[in-house]
Length: 163
Image (cartoon, rainbow, N blue to C red; front, top):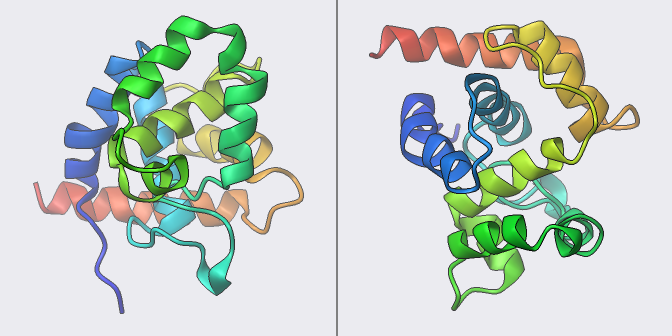
């Protein structure tokens, strides 16, 4: 069985600084981005099981990344520049998505940011699960609210025991 990265380190050393660099940090945003990584990749896998297209801890598909730039960031050049500052210039966009943790966290946050709904409150794991299902996994995706709540609660409980 593959070993998971430490959720507390991903939160403090990757997610919080990445969201701060694009000026989209909040307690609820960092929790949702962490929860997304937990449920999407188990904080373990950087390529979708079954050789699917999704990449990185946040399992973003390259087509989703391309759409983010084409239909959202092109109209918001300052935000696009902030995201590009997180990119490793010698890596392709897909390589950044797969291996650059700060870039991946920021892309995940921007996927949520472009939705009109307000983020659930910090600490509201069920609300975050419903938000993830609606706006990230999508209603047609295989993930469930119950699975999100179970996986995220379990990882956070284990993380609290290791602090």
